Amino acid sequence: MEETEQFSLGRRLSRGVAMAVAMVAIGCVVVFLVGGLVEGLGWWVLVVLAALVGGVGWLKWLQVRGARASRRGVDVVHGMYVDALDRAERGDLTGAAERFEEAVGACGRLGGDAGQYMMDLLQGLASVRVAQGDLGRAVAVWQRAYELSRVEYGDDAVPTLAAANGVAAVLLTRGEREAAGERYRDTLARCRRLLDDAHPETVVARNGVARSAPTPRVGSLHQQGAELYARILGPSHPDTLIARRQAAPDGAAISCLAIGELDRARALSAEAVADCVGRYGEADPRTVAALNDLAMVLREQRDLTAAYRTYERAAELCGRLPGGPHAQQLAAGNGIAQVMVLQGDVANAATELAAVLDGCVARYGEQDPQTAAARRNLDRLEPAG
Image 1 (cartoon, rainbow, N blue to C red):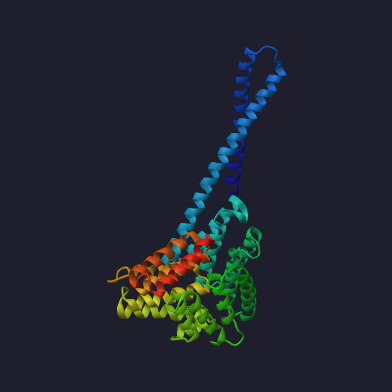
Image 2 (cartoon, helix red, strand yellow; image 1 turned 60 degrees about the horizontal axis):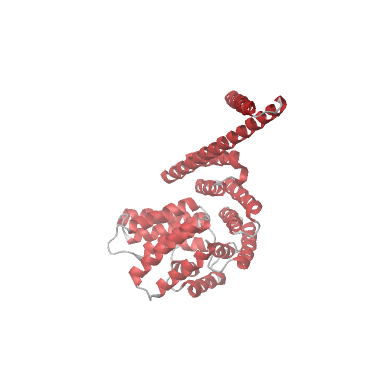
């Protein structure tokens, strides 16, 4: 492999030198032809002009060649990213992790840690590591994303807060409650300075503080979160309903989620989906509700790739049900938008929330509180984009 790379490098260098010589030669010919028409120019002036013309031409050629190589490199990285996502969706987590690692390496060679797509790639890799149960590597990936974001955007930028919440979520999944709680409290303080109380990162941090308590139990912080959601988003908003369920758990999976036992919550939610599929089939409201619950747990665990795919599956199944749009379909759309915001994709999140608003209008009418809450949610997001 090294010999091939050295040969390739030597060949590229030879081509570059040959191109420079050709440029100078062409420049000499052109300048001497011009010089023949202009009296009084010495031979050394003609040589200098020829060298300048050749040098400028060579630099321009290098610029064009570099731009083309960069575009090809970005296309290659994007292809690896899409392939990694496809492998993850098929359940090939090992293959997905390998492709993400390759893409991260290729992206680093293109532009270093500040290369285009690097944050997206690191988030995808962290999600796959969480899904694999390889939490040590997941923490390391999130930590790398956090340090990169601090350098690129600053300590209090939204991508930095998102990465800090990612680190904390994996620490909590590992059972490191004290370390996770410290991270969540620091992030929550910064979120409250910069973001409103309904921003997804503020919500994640606040929930994390409640879940990482030394003695896990449902308490006043859960109830305060539910009341805050009801006041800001409305009593029927999907996030309000989720918060109320965590303040008064209605099942084993939600109870585990509320007290920070994220791995257990994930396993129970996955079992509930499998049970609903077996009992009722896929295209059933109960199955869709179970999928939305599983996606919520995945989102809170910071397995954003799997959360997105699960919400997407729930929305697609709702589309098969007669008489839509259904409440669970709107909840899935809202969840997709939240995942997009957590991934930094605010523009597409706004598009998704606009579709949720249209669904609320169709289902509830213009004056319904649910519609008003959806409109406020969209208005809150759009200025940030």
